Image: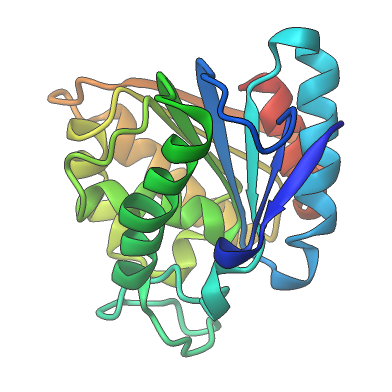
Length: 223
């Protein structure tokens, strides 16, 4: 898979043919909640996506640096579960990075990208569902959360109606997780399913037997 690195923004774009401007129909932005895997795992996922789609592969944007905001996906005011660490909580700062810094740069390099999708794994999946509660006009055609860690902010479950109202497509899955994380995922699933005002196309799946570290890959194939 051909790739180049946008050094300033700390991302790798897979499926690009070089630095020359080129218009693309689809771009997939990929977030992983575990910093040490940001470079390796999204790179492998980018290769798989390109293999599945051949010449029609979307741009696959692996965001692996976050401008040193790798653990800042959580909002500043959060209600984490008791077992979650107290992280810095600069989700709003990452909103700015993603929407007002990175997207314009990719538009400049690749022309006007017609549709964008946000893939998030673990804490990145949490962010994918939480961001629309702050940014109603985020511009993503679909939000895909792979084993999102709702335990980083239990109050997100109560805000999922905003996620639903501000999104066209919402997908989330879960694999082989702890009993407590599986139970919290069940609460989020119930909140989405009972929301009669939800206008988004919502799809929820369970990938039994798939461990946390691999759920992003099986989720991308399903997505």
